[in-house]
Amino acid sequence: MDLYTLCVWLPSLLLLPLISQFIRNKRGVTRSRPPPSPSRLYIIARMFGSLLHHSLTQLSKKLGPVMLLKLGSVPVLVVSSAEVAREVLKTHDHVFCNRPVLEGFRKHLYNFKDVALSPYGEYWRQMRKICVLELLSAKKVHSFRSVRVQEVENMIKSISLTSSCVVNLDEKLNLFTHTVILRIALGRSYEGKEFESGGNLSELLNGAIGMMGAFSVLSLFPYIGRVIALFTRLQQKLDNNFNELDALLQQVVDEHSDPDRQTGEYEDIVDVLLRLEKEQFGEIRFTKDHIKAILMDMYLAGSSSSSIVLIWTMAELAKNPRVMKKVQEEVRRCVGKKEKVDENDLDHLHYLKMVVKESLRIHPSGSVLIPRECMSHCIINGYDIYPKTWVLINIWAIARDPVSWKNPEEFLPERFIDCPIDYKGKDFEFLPFGAGRRGCPGMSLGVAIIELALANLLYSFNWELPPGISTENFNMEETGVFSLEKKSKLQLVPIKYEWELEEKNFM
Image 1 (cartoon, rainbow, N blue to C red):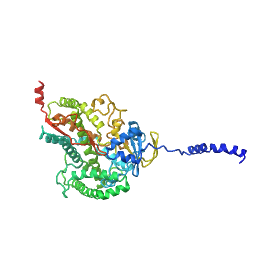
Image 2 (cartoon, one colour):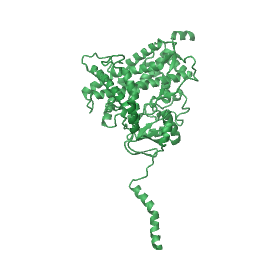
Image 3 (cartoon, rainbow, N blue to C red):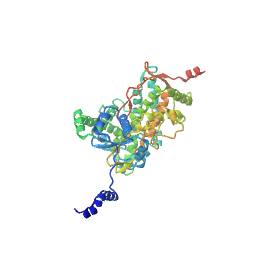
Image 4 (cartoon, rainbow, N blue to C red):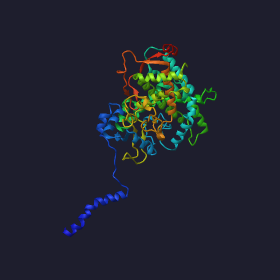
């Protein structure tokens, strides 16, 4: 090659990469920027064997508020800050409003004919409208008032029978919320052998929850998951549970369809859904499977979540006597000499509402929001996120982030004095009920159940720790993968409150 030829071609060769990059940019082809991601080995070593939300939180401190985990065959985006949660749940809510297919729930939700896990689209919009306007409107929640009042009274009477003795509050509160939700949904609790098959609805529902969650996790790992499911007979157990549960729910629907059935004092959820089946609300052709799927949603979303919040709230109050004393004084001052707290009193119990808020902040019933799925490519916090990516919002980490909260590990209801932050989905530092299109439609019902029960527990009894237990060694450990339950049973000593005696002592 002569010198002339070299002088002509060398500059062109040197400019070629720049020209190529320019052409790619013109065509809209840019280099992808994925979120930081730990190795699969790191995930296996660190994330299995400890609590999921703790592992995710520790990992986010190393990698940042946005990270991508490769769990089996699925890429999972984990969000751990309020600002990034705002991007996902507000700015790009239209991109992330789909649900991934959780195989463990498919059968029990009648191929996702429910609301919570049905895919985003016209069907979901119609079902959501039914929930908001017909099932869980403010008027409908108010119509269930008598159920809440009666079951709170039953719980207080039950605890009174063991006054001054150690009481397992887990048992009392789980039974209370379970009964309230079943009465609202089905018209009665169906306790005991009230079914033709002799099946027990409570046992079947509680058994289904654990198996559906386990199967969904295994489905992330197609090969090893199938092997584990085969050896544990999980699929067979899940199928058997569904068949029994379906038969019981069908009996409930048939009883409500009986023209000779006596109507109750309120229209329960089955009544509403059967009415909608006749009226054919919107464009949905309602069937019995739709009804049963929504009933499953009601129980899955409402029963355990309310009891978890109540258990943690009472645990925090037992561990923090100053807060316990202050909230009890407010309740008793407001209620006066009445026998109980009624729902009209709740609007005046401002500190109690702060206690509930603080409990929802530091102990949300779930560590992460129900997974969402990305529907199209978008940019989150500067990173490329692609379709079919699952999204987990770590609300436990967000609610304990020192960037958003002062002394986040401290149980301090006073932080909400003159604080505009609320749990209704507008403030992304605090998301116990989610936000955006997929926010929880049952929030008002859940809060109504929690506040009335808590107020009456605090009014009716003084609460002491069991012998040998102090506020220093009181166990506050968590357990659970997605739901955040208290690891040890909540055991306290209720001392019946007598306002006449308190008044004499004061005088």
